[in-house]
Image (cartoon, rainbow, N blue to C red; front, side, top):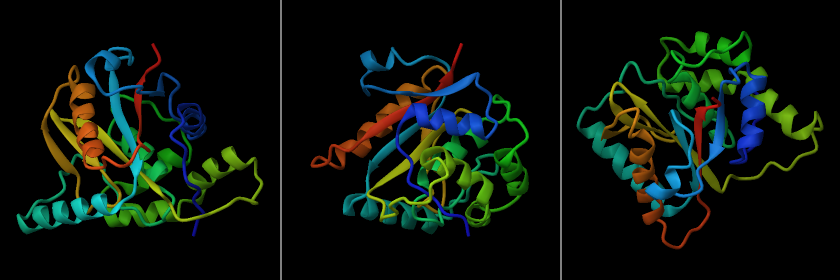
Length: 226
C-alpha cells in the first residue's frame, strides 16, 4: 500500500505536483480570495474545477450521511460520464480532489505519459470503489507528492486529518460535487461554462453556512494560464 500525505490548499504546491504528474502547464490552480461576485471577477477564466477545503465536523458527517441515505433510497446512480472515486486512505483527499479536477476535463487538458495518465487509463470502466482501491495502490502517483513536499525524507508526521477537500466540476451543463467520502456524485442543478464559478461559489457558501463556528475554509480553482 502506498503512503499518503495530507495536501495543503496551496496553489504553488498543487501546480508543482500536477506538472510533475504530466498535466499541461496551460492550466494552473489559483486562490479564490472571496466567494462574492466582486471577488470572483478576479479569477481568470475559463475555470474547469473548483476545490473547497473545509473542516471535518459532526455537521459535515450528519449532512453527508443524510444526503447519501436519501440519494440511495431514491435509486440514484452515478452518471457514467462523471469520473468519481471513493477515498480509501485517510490522507489522500487532496490528491483525489486534483484527480477529480483533471479526470473530468481530459477532453480539454493534455496529460503526458506518467503515473496520472496510467492511473486514468487503468481506471476506465471501474466503479468508484475500485477506482479508490486502484489509487490506494498507485504508489508512483502518491509518492510523487510525498517526494515533492519531503524532498525524499521519510521523517514526517502522519496524523488524523482535520480538514477535507471536495471538487466541483461542470459536466454536460450540470454542476457536480465530487467527494471521495460520498458514495455518489452530488448534482447541484444546471450551470454553464460562463456561470460555473459563480454557481460553485454558491454551493461553497452553503458549506460555510453549515459551519458558523468554523473559519478553516479555503477555495482554489483550476484555470487557464493564458
